[in-house]
Image 1 (cartoon, rainbow, N blue to C red):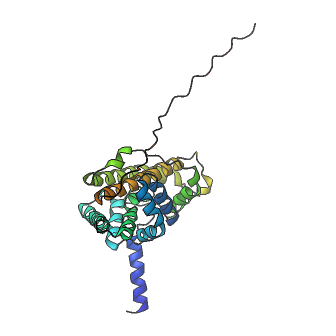
Image 2 (image 1 turned 180 degrees about the vertical axis):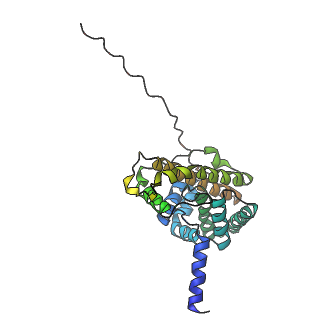
Image 3 (image 1 turned 120 degrees about the vertical axis):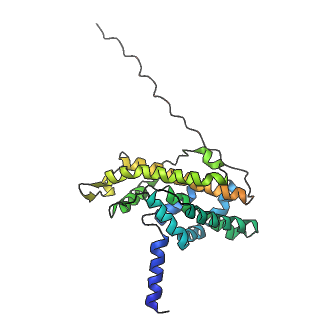
Length: 262
């Protein structure tokens, strides 16, 4: 096959397989590491030891998986055909683990993090019209610049106990929640006909709130998806971390003021 023809096919695969605007590689690695904090120690260690392979495998999403994820993220609805493709990829990972091919199976299992991560991503759930050019670039640059300030919260502890049949409705909620945030991103990062430079924003910006919630939602979704497959593969479920519950409390009342002196 001519070199020019091969190059064109590779370019086409890259454009279709990777949804436009999805989490960049550096944030994918951070998501993976934070999700490992929510799963049993055995699984976390197996994935961490193969982190580079897992991320590389995730970035090589098969053509059909990348295409349907990108289409449904734009439309806002996971189609039955999409769920069938996702189920097939998950089943393949579980089957490999059950056959005792642990290293290959862990890499395949770990790489499925792209499914919930992309569905939970407010930067990808832009709606049918998409975001203005350059908006997602500034959004992801803002997230990367503020990573150390973003607290990772587990908004839905029950997600870590999902059964396989509950996974599809859960993924749809991730997508719905991301789309609910897209108007705010559009309003805050596109003003007066121009994309806002992320360097002009800080933690007080509503964009920070979107980033924190979207990132945490993705971390929770990744852990939930991994755990469904890990239980199906009969993996070691001991030493599962217990999330620390934080309950907001009202500020104490101000001390009584002293009476005025005569």
